[in-house]
Structure formats: C-alpha cells, structure tokens
Length: 253
Ligand SMILES: [Zn+2]
Ligand SMILES: [Zn+2]
View (cartoon, rainbow, N blue to C red):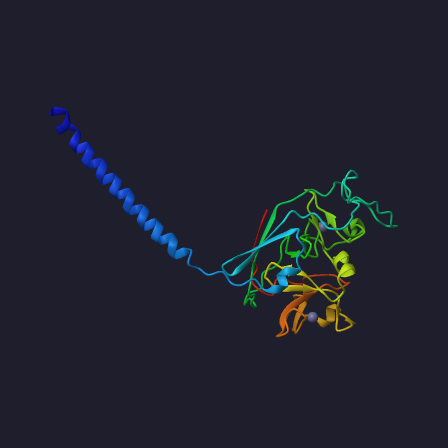
C-alpha cells in the first residue's frame, strides 16, 4: 500500500503530461491541416514543352522544376568517355578547364507572373531554366564583368560549364532554336516570365525592340491573350537586361 500511495502522484503527473502532449498534437494537427488546404494552381500547358530531363510539380502558386543539368546535345565539355562527348575544333574555340558535372538544381517560379514594382537585379548562377533543363545565366562572368574571353569557351551549342561543372547558357541556346525554331519559347526566367527565340513574326528582334529588362508584351503562340516575355538577341545582354521584370522565385542547389 505504501508503494501504491507513493506511486499515484507520479501516475497523476504522467497522465497530465500525456494529456498535455495529446492536446499539443491535436493543436499541431489542426494547424497543419489548415495549412495544407492551400490549393495548387493548375499547371499551364506550356510547361509540357520541357523535356523529360526536367521534373515538374506545382506547389501552391509556384511551379517547381528540378534538373540534373545534363544537356540533351553533344558537347566538347562531356568527359571523353561519355557518349555525348563530341570534339569541337572551331577556330577561336578555347576549351575552359573541367567537364560537365551532374547537378541537382530546383527552381521555384511564380505560376502567374506579375510585374514587380521594384525590379531586382539578377545574380551570378542560374537566373532561369531552358526547356532542356540547362540553366540560363546573366550577361556577366564569374567576376561580375561583361563576357569577353568567356565567349571563346562556348561549345558547339553555345554553352559551357563553370568551375563546379555546372553547364549553362549566357546567350541563345542554339540547340533549342535549331531543333524547334528560332521563334519558339526557350524556357523561363526565375520571375516566371517566358524567354523566346531571336525571331518574332519573321523579323529578327534586336535590343532596340525591347525594354531595359530585355522584353516586351505581345501575344505569343503559347499566350494568345498576350504576356510579357524576354527575347534572346545576338547582342549583349543576350537574355536579360537590367534585372527581372517580375518578382523572382528561388533556386536551390
Ligand atoms: Zn559562364
Ligand atoms: Zn516578343
């Protein structure tokens, strides 16, 4: 009996502790259930144009795109043992050191992009994703300077890897414009606005046709009601000008 009397306050404490934990769990559960009621927006059909190299899902108001960043075209930057290796002997080509290395990059971009009131500058590294999963980079090199000698290191499809082997395009992804067309959609920047090829309605687009962010608003084949979009052009800044037109999403790698 002595033992039981001694034990019962401990038992009471345990019951109270268990109740407390149970209440916390109920509160936490009801909390998370309200969070998960956020409905995902429908994925626009244009996202079906990405190759199977890109895994796509929707999270609320964002499209989530994951890529291993392995280009679907040959390159002098694949290891020579890789079936996609192809030498490139063009005059003026200076192969940068290093090979293409598989990556794991996740882009989260707005599904319904809107113009930002304050335009954010692009930074080094991925600023967008092309239809074959290769990231777009801005018009600057790793030191934040305009591209000069780096251009000579672009391979046969105008891409090259950075120091960690991350393959990317600073300019027109010529494999995509060659295999699709030079007026086709090529991908998206981080703000969710699409990037188109260098030709529109049969006319070559120049920087003079575009605003400071390197885009404009017209109807396109994929957006018959019209949308703001970037164009790649032959002249610097090539893809994006003075920052994002919309509010950029995120990149994790
Ligand atoms: Zn580069
Ligand atoms: Zn256009």
